[in-house]
Amino acid sequence: MNENEKTSVQQADAAGQPPETLTRHLGRRVRHLRSTRDWSLETLARISGVSRSMLSQIERERANPTLAVTLRIARAFGMTLGELLESPGSASRLVVIRADDRTYHYRSDRNARIRTLSPLNLEKDVEFYEVQLPPGGALRSAPHFAGTREFVTVQRGRVRVEAGGDSDVLHSGDSASYRADVPHALVNVGHGQALLFLVDIYCQGPVSGV
Image (cartoon, rainbow, N blue to C red; front, side, top):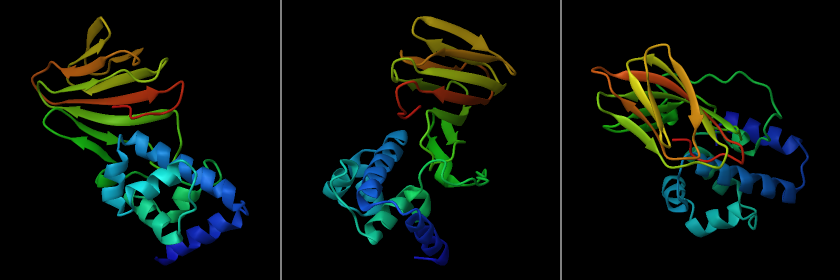
């Protein structure tokens, strides 16, 4: 553990929270962070090196993991130990997301390249993404929680927005909002690469937005 992580642990301990409170908080944090990435328990176990059974117990708030186990989980999410244990809003800080930080590269394949622009360590009901679509590329999503809406702004290109039975084509500078609790899609109908910014607003709790 480096000096920054040691300092983070000291700051987390300084909050004076009882062990059972920290156990509940950690379980909720891990469960939320895993769901925002659309990771299974098996995926998190593979990345972190922590067994699936231990992760399941942590998420169900039935385990008080060692510092080493908690550190492995934090690193799997690209976070420091202090960031994982920190309660939302307990600290005010400037968070910078660098363009070349691959921790925030959510997805990259022949259909779409997606980069999250939201801090990964925050529990949030709003998520912000940069989306690049090659010609003919499409980002298709299953319904999210009831009441969820998406807001999209096209920076470059032509993009068809589909939500349920509705659709329209957006050009550079256009914006649209639509229901995301029905099957929905963003389709590049132009001849060049499309660049757009996408915001998901959840009403009943966050899940993976894309």
